[in-house]
Length: 260
Length: 326
Image 1 (cartoon, rainbow over the protein chains, first blue to last red):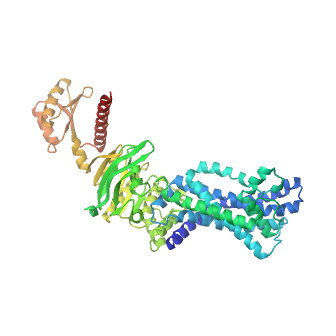
Image 2 (image 1 turned 90 degrees about the vertical axis):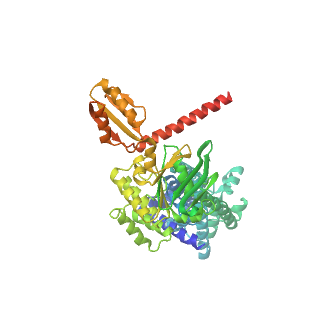
Image 3 (image 1 turned 180 degrees about the horizontal axis):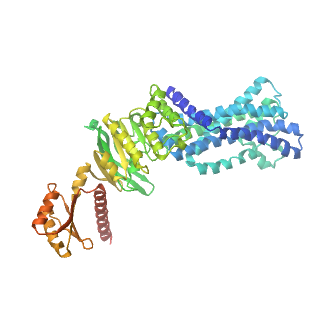
């Protein structure tokens, strides 16, 4: 276990050094949700039935979760690039813990997300979003967000190891933008036709978004929703547990075996 | 017995779908020596290295690296090997120094920063140490790659085509570094398409062809297989036959003629044949000589000849099988 902690720490250091060497990508990924908040909040929000300020409060938790979900692209692209360029093979020939490479990546993703949440929420405050519940609940909301981001990192790393090629990973990454569109991140799901609503509410993004809205006190839990959304905190924890339980072992296995 | 071999493989096999990349690779590399694995593209050299460095699992066969079983003791094998090649690479988005420190840390080297600086100096990368590796030239990258395999001195170093695509100066630097390593007791297994590389570096050569070791021996033994080239150029076309008779007598092989150049060539396995003797004999026979040469064969000759022989043998076998089937 101490081997894993040490090697994982070294791999985390590698990812953070890469970001420091090349901060352009970080700035891009951090400003993206802010741009979307302003665009969706003022442009699209103007056409919605919900009043603008209320929609922006509704949108802030949605974008936090959507960004965390799309964050799977970071791990996916990195793992695919490392495999394609051959660094992964060097790691595989080193006497290091088999889980260290994916764990270091997931940990780096978590730190970057945590850091990026601060400027995003400051802009949120500027456009009218508020913590309307207790401070403890707000801390819980951030904790849940990071847990979800950690789960998505494992999904991304596994997919990246599977595709093994930067281009394929890039194309697959584009497809992940659809995921938040099929959830309640940007719009309430109660207006959707029956089957589509069920589909959107079983999207893990919907459970986590609802939990954040509930914990921040931005919007109540909708009536008549599917179980993960009707019980958003339990639903989110369950989704994260399932995603980690499935994808973390798959990613480690895939890393350890390569094309063996 | 096994302890005297740093690499010992028996019957390693590996398939990729329909492709039978290795068909029973037997390889024995004595400790502290350099073994050159030579072969044409697609012979299975890279697959062999990937198997021996734990990157791929064999379908059949076994191997011991530095005394440890390749499959059952993969972790122990990884502690004792270094790998550099076409694929085991470094991180292009990190600087040279950051790369070496990372690998030193992962190898549990005491004082990773100091070790990184030492290697940067030794491989002439100190000046570029703080630049991203993606800005390095091919030669610098390859040197860094080799340095990364040496952060902790490996018992066995695997080099997969370490100098492919490098300029002669960079190639020499890599060769010098490899020689220094074996002086310290490291065993090196290197694959190469360059016969010169195997000739200059290797104590032993294993010629790999179609997933098997087709021939092993020292570079000198390989050359002795083919013998030396004798060539004489005469002044008049009509004395070529006379020259050929002398060559036939001296070498015991049938000479061949190049009528345009008025040259007669033959191959000799007689290591006592010298150029003065050749000239004296021809002169005594009254052959008016314009030029005479006695050249050791290049590994290229050996390589071509051995792979051709293997090819022909296979074709004969194939034809026989077809006949039997018909």
